[in-house]
Image (cartoon, rainbow, N blue to C red; front, side, top):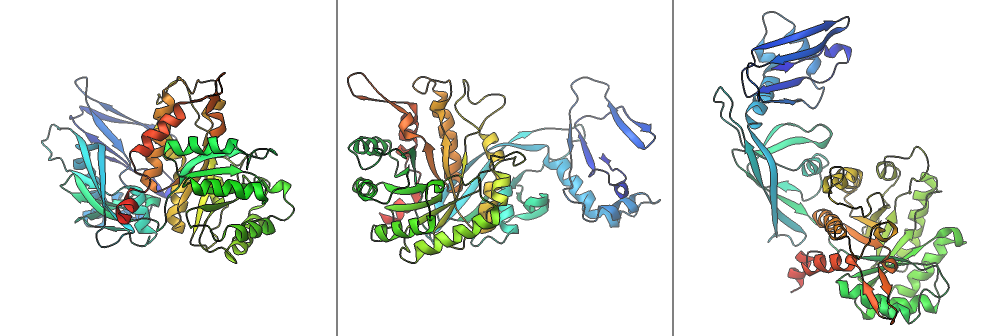
Length: 474
């Protein structure tokens, strides 16, 4: 059954009811402005039905409404809409509930993966013996990538366009199968993941304590350290050298409120670091620039990038969104990414911070799980596809800043591993904040690690961060 509002008056998109049992009565309650309620009655308890919107766009619907008000109905004029409804009448009887995903490196392209999604279904039977239709859909973000012409993205299975996901592109699926295979490009440089530390104190860098700090990071398997400071002196370069000796990327990150000329600051750093190996250094340009006006900020990012590239053409740059802490800037990060413009530099990763989900007494729970993060970060996924750019979650976590015990609450492991799953799936770089808060010093001077380090070791022990490139280099 298809319920169609008066579309010419701005009504909602049509609603489809797919019944598993025959209703005994369907009644309509009328008001001054038309139908206000629809009541479906069954003769037995436990009846089942699906309620959905099968059409995702207004395109052609006004014409359909005109046709459907005629008598007799000219079915040929509404064939495409009827076919879409009949498709869902069958497809809902084979309802996908979970999926498994696997990938291999494309043998013809070192910078692409062949990905297979295999779905599991909850199968239903209706009273009319309708034949269920199994669909293996292309993930909507991949459909969006095709809509945007993302280079190198393609469907390898014999799939069909079955309709529309609206703003996310065509509904593409393999009909009669539980598997769809597609090719996904990956970015042509390594991913980095590690820890951030607040290092603006006068004795925070270039001191013996850094050696213990770096060894703790290295023990987790991480490959990057993001110390925040504004220095270009010998102490700053000593920390860089110690990172290089331990195989860790050193990420510069400044607070520009204390720097007179941030462009010259990065030009100086670029001159000092240009001869280090490509994986040794990165520049995270401005930390949480919440006071910047978007146009001026985007122009400043381009100026800093140009100053770095005048002397250093090999190291990564991280460019942050304008952190929208002020009123009216929610939802974050949608507003933040809406204000960010790509610089055009091919070795730039675009970055944001998110502390919304910190350690809680129980995770996952009825309010928060991995789907919450995926939905919240949709603007970052969209920006990445729109601009062919990798993403960096430069600061997240802060689990030690909650009332929860990061040495005892094992939900910390589950929550971090969910973050890592998303990072792997979309090729993100990441830095947990703050590595200096997740260890404590015992009375005898020894270090006690928290569950943060355990979660990191579990993740990096699986060797997923750069698994494809490890195979390539070997």
